[in-house]
Image (cartoon, rainbow, N blue to C red; front, side):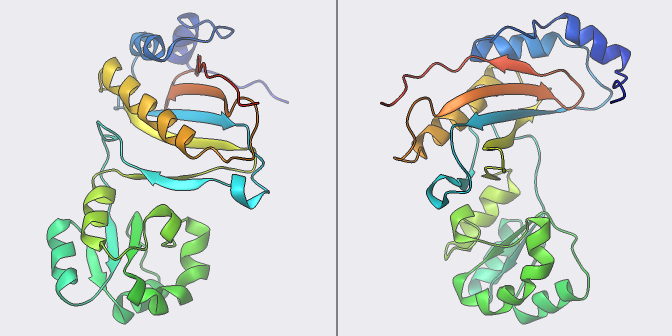
Length: 234
């Protein structure tokens, strides 16, 4: 396998982190702040390895979460809804609302949005879009909070950066916890909130440590291993 050629900035950053060390949650973001910065405001990502078997229905976790300090990124939200709530959703920040006509627009190829929300009454229109929205992870679902009667609140939350997540085939959860322009304290609080939320989703069938490994990294930086201490369940 060919060796990956790293940029000078990346190599400089790598010198500032001990790859074999597990840093405390707060210390990890202090180290990240010391890395040379890119010419853009990098996203700070977290990878969490969970002790789960995603092939088992009760251990294939998914959901949505709002962070205390947001993610630093807004989202273009559309809503399948009609009537009075449609106008309220527009006011809340939705870029498009509607029922059958919105579904037709998507069938014709329009996908200029980041999140789709649906009122349960509109699933008759949304259901036929599964082959289009499913592969792009845009299909509304109750588990992620994108199929809900309270569509107005959902618009506000997702337009403001609420994140959907699910375990991948390896039992990992990947999320953004902010931007490098955030203070180390805000990034730490966001990550702490993520880990507490995940702990709350722990399946009763999981024994031992639930959160096995955590690492954080900027878009253009090396990863930093974070120490997560929690007593295993026997």
